Image (tube, rainbow, N blue to C red; front, top):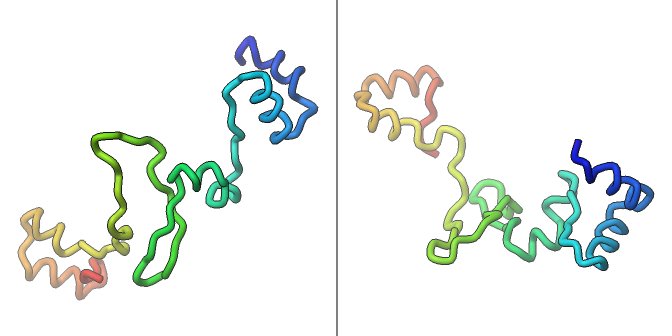
Length: 117
């Protein structure tokens, strides 16, 4: 435990999260709330800063997904398409790994590998 933890608890312990962040901000202390999972996708700060983005999935429709949490000025991150479905590229990957079509087809027929979706 940090030496500052007891002092921080004593100073802010009775406050709720929003009140504690407001008091810290008023004192000039950079602070942001820790959000719970159910708050992540609607947190105004995360949405406004592009950490949460809306994306259209061809199967599921509109989705809100995690975006980049860091920015690189010379190489911005752009989401051009949704993540592939599970197994969507299985045969292609096996082919790149040197497997022949007959062996891949046997795996597809056995249900081990899905044909690209």
